[in-house]
Image (cartoon, rainbow, N blue to C red; front, side, top):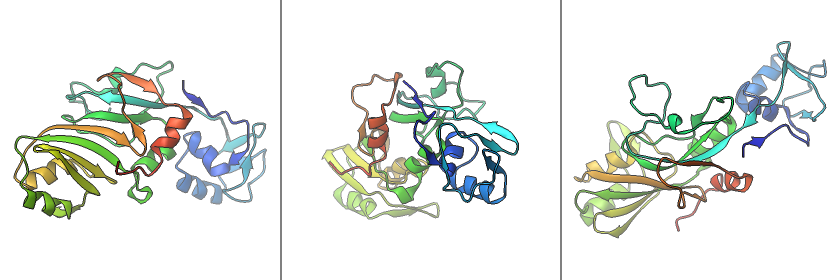
Length: 244
């Protein structure tokens, strides 16, 4: 089920504004400083002021209410894109999800069209930022199959990080499961990072599947299917993750 954030306990004003979809917490603090926000008709003392369940919050004169927050896991199949912005995409992951009211969702970290596996879809911008920004060091684990085994020397070289097209690519860890099969662990996930690392080692990626985000695992969810995340699973996804 979606997590209803019509809170029963006070929350900080910036978190309230972020949960309502007004702005990220950082930008919400600027809005508070600019005098755009009132609590019960009065300017707040600061961005950390508490907002209780009976308080009225106005943004530029408009009463703000919290959105219902959605946290979904989907097992993305190959051939689907993770954006609604590509008008030329034949298949989009959001077409696999049906929710009442059609809330505006986004993927918290993308997988390219030919990749598959664990994808988190949400409408909580603050949560999405925590999952994807490298400073939070949320590890993502992928299983990769290559067209041929990567020689040990090349494998050790890409383990140390490379520069590709002027951009540094530095995996947190690469394990060889057996020849041609690898476990990649990243904490940032730059565009097509694993495919670029494999290509630089003289190999080609045949299969790429994300299995884990933080301490949240894909499990046995079938390809193309989705389900709600529980509050405990949301918390698991925000753990830094392990190398196990």
